[in-house]
Image (cartoon, rainbow, N blue to C red; front, side):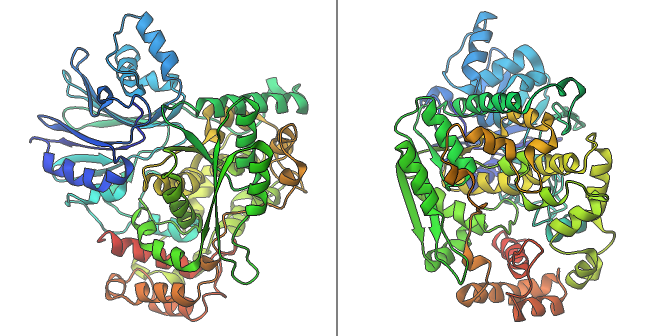
Length: 593
């Protein structure tokens, strides 16, 4: 079975696992897996699963999946794209299969190769595997953190789930605010790096990490994959043309892998370089009957709300079945509560509501889509990548260009009880100090790919698509593509004129110049850049709510200042500071925090 789904579990210490706690978590996870549900409880170990059927649609692939002969049970979320090759290898080793999907391949691979079987997987995944005989449980997450996994210590033991709100459902969680995480949220465009979340009682398993929980409750973590951005001496003779050929081959393989499904696969087509290149590569490799999807919003002032001109151009070029969703301001406002409820952690980016509304429509047509997320972080597509090429103080310059507030403004914004050190600057400064890459840009790309990407765009796409039972696959985050990009010389990615140079060069074999050389687009939701009318009313109601006043995360003078001048109080990236705090407060009210 294909398990683009939701999982949860409990490991109780000194008692039996609670089926009630599992079902409470699974109710929260229902949108991630609307097709089926299952629970496994054996003594102190309980696993729950909600299924979205994409591979092996039969009941043979229901989860949690038990293999009595091997003494293993698994709950799995994600897709192992090379599962058929691994299945053949395991059959040659003597294993017999009762299903046709990737979950059973996970079980057999674990039995044969142990937890390090993950090194053989091409895919996105989060899983829990329980060993019957030893009582050991292993949790794992894919290399780039595409699939989420949260956990919490409780009075009973350890709980884990695919979403943070699911962990809140049974109660018994410390919901107090983590000051360092709040500082990150307010500095770093709502990003809170793993293992932190905004709540002290809930953590998230970092990408490329295995956590082993022994029967006595002791835990250990192992990072099973790393990458380092920077050139290697042995690559010095590779020409720009050879790098381009390697990139084309790697991306072609990546999009092919992500067509593995027993249901149709579509593409989210913004009309930008990244999504357009995915369409072109699939068409070039003989994929027919491609369905593409685009969304656009009402224009506000001088901010255009759609890029349909470009998405139409690409759809016509490659003969796709193209679907356009036009969203007016009223529909955007109506969708806000659902969008915020779908967030595992609060997110300020306008993309969230765009992906939420688009996913609602796309899910009526397909269960799987490919998306262009990750290209900007991996191939240096943002304005700060150009600006930081020759930085003499990469920490200070990155903070100046990217952070939403400096530490001085943070003191104006936050309750003094939540202030301490400059957590966010200290974090990036220590991170850059550990980087192996010599050039400033290498260090920034390491941070953006390893940290920022995971807990901003990738999390956003997962949360918003899975809110409607839609699986999003991201070819630019194929780990072989990421490893290849990491080795490329920085000058091939960005110069004083443009970013993503090598990607644009590769695209010229497939796409019209009009698409490649167009100004960089974003996912615009103009009504959330300029907080006016009913959107300002929404923010005012949330921030004037008694729960917000009682919580007192923010200094009231600061809130009043933002409400008085919402269009004047923008971050260095041009986003609304008012929206940032309103989303945080609305998220906490929504989830009873």
